[in-house]
Image (tube, rainbow, N blue to C red):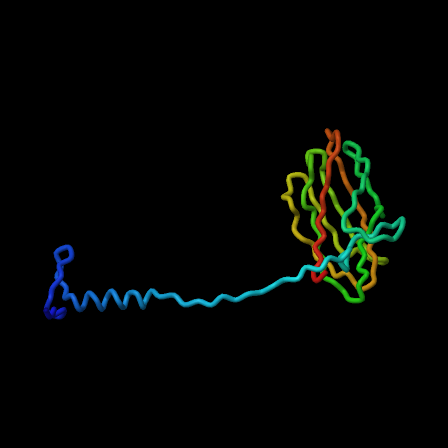
Length: 179
C-alpha cells in the first residue's frame, strides 16, 4: 500500500493542510527549538590566614585584630569625644589597599542624636563617617587608601539624645579590597 503524503490532507480546527507539510513543520520545529550548550567548570581555593593585610590594631599590645569591642559612657544631651580609642586600623602590607568604612547599624538608635567617627593618619583626617537621628542605615561607604605599613587612629564623637537611657550598640563595617 502506497501513501501519498503530498496529496493527503489533514484537517485541524477547520483548516486543511497536507500531511507532508505537517511532517516538515513538526520536524523543523524540533530543529529550531534544539538547544546547544557547554558546561564549564571552575574551582576556588580558600586559604585561611589569621588577618587581612588591613585590619584593626590593639594599641596596648600592638596585636592584629579582625574585630573588637569598645565601650564608652554617654550622657543625655551631652557630646562625648574620644580622640584615640583602644584600637586603630593598620595596613601591615608593603602595598597600599583600598578601604571603605560605614556605620552598619545602631541598636537602640533612639539614644543617639548623632555619631561622627574619624580615621586619621599621623597628620590629617583620612575619612569621616557620620550618622544623625532619622538618617538611613547602613550609611554609605566612605573610601580611603590605606598606605603601606601605616597605622591609623580612630576618633569618635557621640551625642546622646535628651531622653537617652540604657545602652546602644553602634556597629561599623570595614571593607578591604584585595585583602
